[in-house]
Length: 560
Image 1 (spheres, rainbow, N blue to C red):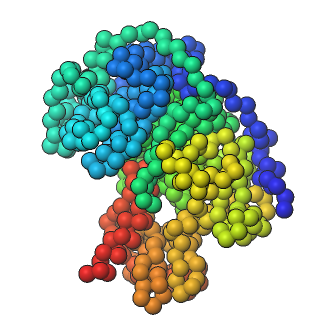
Image 2: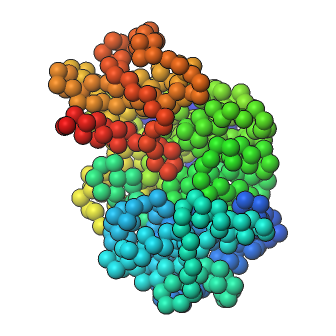
Image 3: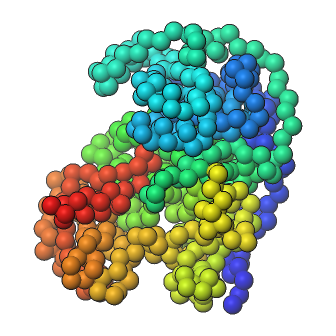
C-alpha cells in the first residue's frame, strides 16, 4: 500500500517537512518583545497591553516565583480563565524552569485535590473567587503558596470599579485578601517585581513545559507530559498550515480556554511566536463573542463546533459584521457539514475541521484551509512531519484503504508519556506510535475519517454502530441546533440508539418526523429508537458534549 498518500495533496505553499528551532517556548517572548515592543500583544475587555509590557510583567512574576523557592522541574498550577494574568503566569512559570499544570476553574474540590496531589504542584495561581475552594483542599496537597488575582485587576476604568459588583451579583462571593503569609496578591507582585533576566539551562527535547490532564472520561484524568519541543513543533506546524497568515499582522480570537490544550497551542503559544494580537474572552458567550468580532476584527478564530453553532443560531447575529474572519480550524468534536457551510457563507472566511488529542499537543490532522477542496466529513490529512495509519484492533497491523480500524499517529508533537503512569504509557505509546482510541479509516488520497471513539461505538444486536454517522445525518435537519447520539442499555439488543436533541429557537419537530427523516439516509438498525428533547446538553468547558454523562444518567434511570 502506498505510504503517505496525503503528501501529494499538499498545496505548494505547505512544506511536507519543517525545521524546528531547538529552543524553549518562553524564549519566543524575548524575541517578540525585542522586535515588536510597542505592538499590542493582548486586548482584554477594552484594556490593551504591549509585548514589552507583557515581557516585563512576566519577568517580575518569574523573579517573584523564584523568590518563593521555585526550582527547575517544580510544578505550578494555573487556575484562571482567559485573561492577561493567564498569559503572564504561563510564561513566568516557564521562565523559572517550572512545569505548568493547567487547571480548569470549574473543577470541584474533589477534582482539584486529585490534580494537585497527582501533580504535586508547589504553587497555584488562581482567581480570587476560587480561593475558598482551594483553601479547603490545600492541607491535603503539597501546595505551599497561592497567588491570587481578580478579573478587575486588568480591566480599564471604569469597568474595574463596576466588575466587583457584577461578580457579587453573579456568584454571591466577595473576597478580601491580604498580601501576607502564603497568600500573594498578583497585583502587588507585579507592582514590586524585579526585572532581572533569568538564565537557566534547558534540554529543549526532554524538559517538560506542561502537565496537561486528560478529560478523564475513562477513569481518573492522567497528566500528559508535553515537552518544549512538543509544543513548539505543533505551533510551528500550525503556522505552516495557515500559510497566508502574516507574522505581526494577524489578530487571533482567544475564546477557547487556555487550560484546554487546543486554546493554549493555537492562541497562547502561536500568538507569542508570531507576534499576533490576542483578543481574549474569559468565557464563551455568543452575544459577547459576536460584539467582539464586530469591534476587534479578528482574522484567525480557532474554535469548537458548539462555539460556531452558538454564533450561527444567535437571534442578533445579523446585526454584527463577521467578515474579518479569514481562517478557522475547528477541533474537540466533529464539525457538522451544515455548520461549516453556513459559517463560511456568513463570514466569507474558511472553516475547516481538524483533529488531535491532548497527547499530541494537540493537532495531528486538519483539512487544508486554502489550495484544496474541503473534503466533507473528513478530519483532513496529517500535518507536516506527522505520520498516521489505520491499524486492526485485533492484530495491530495496518489495514487497507477504506477499512475501519484504530487511528495511530507519530510525530514531533507526540507526548513523552503519562506522568508517573508507566503502564498507561506503555499501553498508549508503542514504538513511538500513539494509539488514539479513535476508530476511523483513510481513503486512497490520504484523507482520514473518524467514525467514533473506540469506547463510544454502539453494539446493537451484533451490529457496530458509530454515533457520528447518525449525528451527521440528523444535523442536516433544519429544526436541530445541537444533538448527541449515545448507546443506552437495551434488554433485547444489548444496546440501542438514543438521540438527545436541542431544537433551534421556535422550531417544532416530532419524534415521528425525525424517525422518518433519519430512515431516508441510514440503515434501519442505525436509526435512533428513542429521542429526548432538551434545552441544553452537558458540556466540558471547551464545548465538547459529554456523551458519557448522558449514558450514566440513563443507567441510573433504569436501575430505579
